[in-house]
Length: 339
Image 1 (cartoon, rainbow, N blue to C red):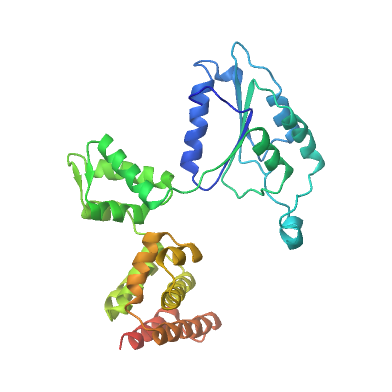
Image 2 (cartoon, rainbow, N blue to C red):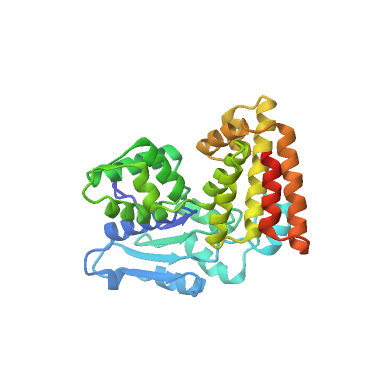
């Protein structure tokens, strides 16, 4: 864009909504002159328009300008069909194109260079589709993934400096744990945090705790940590707080079981000689999360983790069948675990 090189078509996809929106805004600011957005800019609802509608806007020439920008938000065109998802044998093949898409495909084979057409979606895209492959050939398909922990930390430090503030290391880690990895959520929480610490240049851990609510994963981690340290009272207190916050009992059981299952997997992989990076990749787990969980593994031996999972499975069955009530049953189990 800075070199003046603009492709005729782009696909922005991926879970990092904030960066996708920033990219679209940057294109609009760079391509559309002030006061000319009504003439040369179209924002279309991808769920409501047809491929023919998109082509009609894209084939319109710009007025008093060199470029026209057409943005299609949340199109369903890039989703794979149910049949394609079921057809495992054709996983690497090409997905059949619907008749309605052919008009758009024909346009993309020879798109107007005076139009910049942008599709933006947070949904998964099927890279086997002709539409995706053609956009990649004629323009750019860009995957907006979440930033790494290191990049998020640098981004946070940069935002703090711009506001004439500084995070303590503990506060920065806690803030990213609480609000990350979505930049959209981080931006909203950061605004609240800056207002909360108005008049203070240093943001401390207690400031983050006073503004940001912990995620359910963090609460579950703390509960399991308390169990590993034989602090049953703390674990029960954490569960009561989550129930008071209207967390469904079945979800709590599911999350606690998941935590123990991950601990067992990590412990097994460590014993088999896998390195930290390999384990993180296998379990699709950020390195900083693995580091925390590897430390937590030290509180349990293998038999304790297996027993915990079996007991939680039995508890889940008893609660679902109505034979036992959730909290009394869980309290009895935790007291036994901590004894």
